Image (cartoon, rainbow, N blue to C red; front, side, top):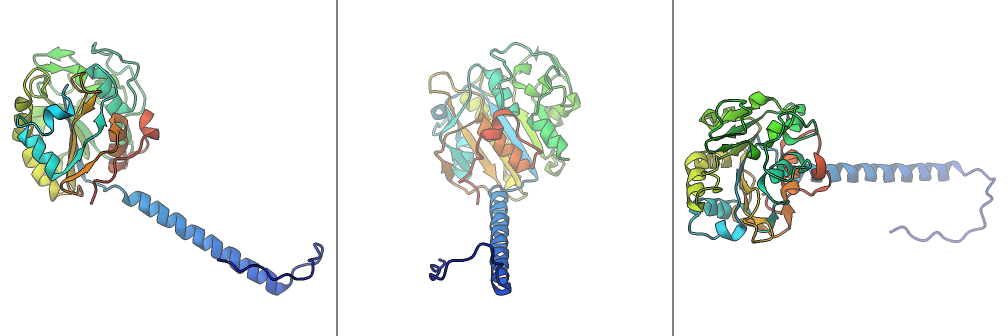
Length: 303
C-alpha cells in the first residue's frame, strides 16, 4: 500500500518538476507497466493452461435417451465405466427436439433454422463450423459414419443410415471426402485426424435398438481407442443428441482419456454449445461458431 503523501506547500502548476521527481515518476510508471505486463502474461498463460491440447479427439453421438436411462443403468456397463473412469457431466442438456437441429447445434453453434428431420440440401450452408475451423487452423478433420454407403455419399438414408445425423453434409465448406464410412475407421490410432465424429447407425446409437445394444457397440468398436487415448494424449467424448422428451432434455455426456481426472464430475449446466466451444478450444480452432462464441468451456474435470 502506498503511504499517504506528506502535506507540503501548494504546488505551482506552472513550475516544472525536478529531475528527481520526474525520474521517480518514470520509474514508478515503468514498474506499473511491468507489473501489468506480468499480470497479462500470467492471465494469458492461465487461460491457455485451462484446457489440454490433445492430439486426437473422437466425439461419439448417441440417440434419444435421458441421463438416468444410461448413467447408473445396468444396461450400460461400458458407458458407466467411462463415466467413473473419466468425467461425468451430470447436468448436460440438448438444445431442442427433434434430432437433426441438435446435431447442427453441436457442429456449428446453431440449429441453422432447422426444425425437423427432413433431408437437407447438401452444401447449402457456408457458415463456420467445427470442421471448417479445425481445417483453417491447419488441423485435420473427418467423420466416420456407420452404414454410410460409400465415402462422401450424400444419400438421405440407406438401411439404418440416416443423413439427419450428419450435419457436415449441410455445409459447402466441408469436403465431402471427409465423410468416411465406419469401415474406414483406422486400427492405427496415430493416423486418426485431430478431430473426428463417430456416428453409429440407427440401431447402434440406441435410436431403434436398446441401451444395451448401443453400449455394446461403443465397447466393441471404441474401447481399444479409449484405453489407448489415456496414454497417447487423446480424448473420447460420448454424448447424446437429445433425451426421450421426458427429462427436460437432460442427456448423458462423458469425457474420457488423457488429462481427464478419473472419477471427476461436474454439476455445472452445459449444453451442445458448451461442448462445441470446448472442442474448438481443445483443438486450437481458429474461432468459435455461432453460440459457441458466448458459451463457456467445460472446466473442473481436467488434471
